[in-house]
Length: 540
Image (cartoon, rainbow, N blue to C red):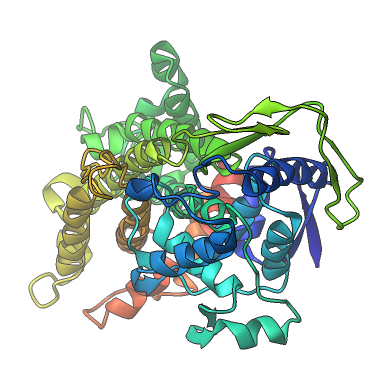
């Protein structure tokens, strides 16, 4: 099994892709253990002192003014986790939880959170044992961290929560014992460090981004196939048009369409004598729409990569440069320097702890909203192409793509399904980030709603993938009405892939299972590979 070495602060998209898919193990870069030890020394000194330090010996949120005795510091952290396990709804997918585990351990390992090495090692061991904590999907507002979902993840590692095993909820302790992992025992600040942070909303958004990559590439293919089925012009894809506008995604999308359509006999057959002056926008403006969505997706990738590598808990621990620690031999021996910086309002510490707001997931929320709009648009223009194909007055194909319309309804109601899904996406695309509801007795008075904003990408992608699946079926049917003419080599390859799953539709039949099979082609990466190899475009 492949082992990926995580360098905290430098995780790549390809590493995240492998983590999401599973079947890999993780290790940490050696320097991380030194950084972990330094920040843990600062927290240990704060816990031993008498000054109030938020997150170490105080209550949380609105209760920050409540002092906690030294004897109750461990209880404080355990109570924090238990009280915050209030999530509801279906469990997060294993792919999302894997990203949560990996990004949380990488964040703590940067050495600004004050956790001991045992905390990071437990996260690492749980990932490598393929343990999936049972994490209900709903219950986070995306500020003060993804508190509820991360608490559920942590409680499972403590042996008190639940794991997801083959789709079933199982008590966590036996699962930990099965893989030889001791339940995590929390120290000062560690519960807070584990549940503060944006790892759930970020994981959901990364899951959406990686799924969108496949759907987007498939939509390039289905759009090109529809263009040829409708005997559309390739003139709007002329590189000179896109060069003078200068939008990079548009330029790349236009090139992809040109390459996907190159060599089509269908296109050659109507270069002369076609009385149509211009194609409808759903064909002609594909580079403009899909290019803008491509630019949006790449912007989201940069934001989410930064967030996956970020330290997003609170308070943050900044160890003094003079702090010396023993080599990372798993014993966590720490030698504090003489003197040291002042903790705010407290005694000398070997560093400083500063409260801030990195747990606020606004960057993720805005990126998720941007992605939602792009997902909706990819589906919306595809739905318009389906409507165009079944309208004989525009496509000049048989009405509803059936030879005996009237006796057969053809694609009439398949289009209705696509319209329903496109309309549903319009509602789901409403920005989540503009809706803030104060929590914690108004102490946390502006929140990002990033977790929902990222979570709703999944249903939107399901909708758009189904729309593209329906378009593939419709466009393939349209191509067949133009035989013996053949489309381009890449599009004939797509046609053959589809026909290996779904036969030509000559008379009305049970179509729902065939839509599902066509949708599976959208999501499984086959079409994305054609776009990459034949369309010369790498989406992300």
